[in-house]
Length: 128
Image 1 (spheres, helix red, strand yellow):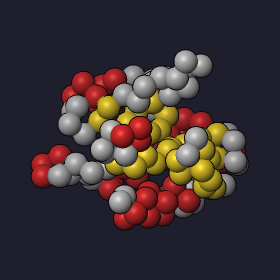
Image 2 (cartoon, rainbow, N blue to C red; image 1 turned 90 degrees about the vertical axis):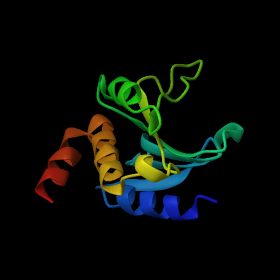
Image 3 (tube, one colour; image 1 turned 45 degrees about the vertical axis):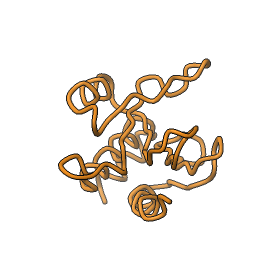
């Protein structure tokens, strides 16, 4: 269902230094050096009938975007272990005036990368 959205996300994430993809908890996930997740792609996660991106965000960013534009952004549920706390969810299937802006998604994924990547990889990204 969300094949085109996943393809676009895949091109964005895999363009970042040392990012790879594998399934994690049943969803495509992109990792820095195979360990730090920068984003998950969800296609109807737990029957929610939405296509979305979940990613870590700099402090305060997720709350600000969710409060400003709840039609486009959401806060993923935090797991019992605390995973996904402070993460940002982006609806990739919104339409009309709330349609996804892929340039913005690229910036969000890059911010997620900068949130979790080692300083050496961030410096490499800045040089490229």
